[in-house]
Structure formats: structure tokens, C-alpha cells
Length: 234
Image (tube, rainbow, N blue to C red; front, top):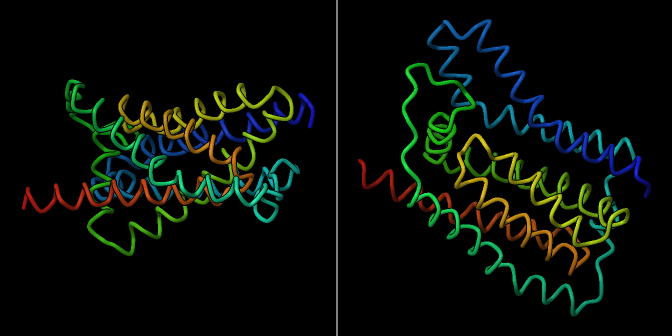
């Protein structure tokens, strides 16, 4: 891998977010005066994000940046076993960090006209999705697989080959955290921690399946919290 490959990997992984944001903003500007369209843009934005993530993975694969070895060529067996043993911890730590930060953060000011990328709208979309087990896990599986392919199986190994494992771990975690800016500062910090821990188990195991397992377990913890909150409110 070369510096040019790293530049391409950064463009693809970072570029998914502004492309998604610009698309939703343009749709909002052109169609957002209709309440039904605004609701659709807000509550279905996660699916649009998932589609953009998939397009990023496809682009990475076509450019030869996706590390296919991470899917079928893991490191030594003991390293894989250790990585999977760490999966529960790697899911719990960012989850509780995010909870701790959000409990100390001041509530976001309500927007008179919420846009699809505002913190409140993103949280509303997540809560709405959590009401359907099928829809939640369909989207959770899609985004988890796409994010792991893009950040841990593409950006991380390319950056590691060019700049070393430490720089790669930090860079991929920062980009991953920034992708969750719509959920607020607490989510960015939580995902930054997740990016560091999930990237570490990726480097340890040499297979994206380890961070994918941690990612899905994290999603389970979030889903259970949202369902408990919904039951309390009801």
C-alpha cells in the first residue's frame, strides 16, 4: 500500500458522511415543506445512511482497498480466541462511556424545524426503529457489516501499512467517531472509544469478524436500552 492508497481510503471513508448529509439537505430543501416528506426524511434517514455506507464499501472494493484477507485469513488461533474473548468488554466499554457522557451533557435545544441530521431527529429515528425488532436488526446488521468493512477492513489496514498500527488505529477511530456526529457529542466520544477498541481486536485477530461481533453486541445493548425507555414512557 502507498500514500496514494491511503488518500483514496480516506476519501472513500470520510466522503460517505458529507455525501449523505448533502443528499438529505438537498432533499429537505426541495421537498421538506411537505410534512409527510419531512417525516420520511427524518425517520428513514438511517436507511439512506446504510445505502451510502454500502456504496462506500463497493467503491473501496473496486479500488482494491478492501482487505479481503480480513474475511478469510485470520492471524494465529490464539490471537483470534483472545480477540473474541475480549468482545464483550469491547462492546460494554464504549456503551457505558457513551452513557456516562450523555448523562452529564446538557440537553440539546429543541429545533422548531428539525432537520434529518439534527441530534433530536437522529435519536427519534433510532427510537422509532427500535419499535420493530425486524427493522432494527435488519438495519443494525447492514450498518455494522458495512461500517466494519469500511473502517476496520479498509481504512485501518491501509493506514497501518502506510503509517503504522498506532496512527492507523487513531485515524480510523476518529473517522468512525465523526460519522456519528448526528447523534451528538456523547455518541461521537462513545464511537471514538469503540473505534479504538474494535480496531484493536481487528489488529489482534486479523479478521473483521471480531470487531463485527463487538459491534453487534453493542447494538444489542443500545436496542435493549431503547426498548426499556419506551416501556417506561408508555
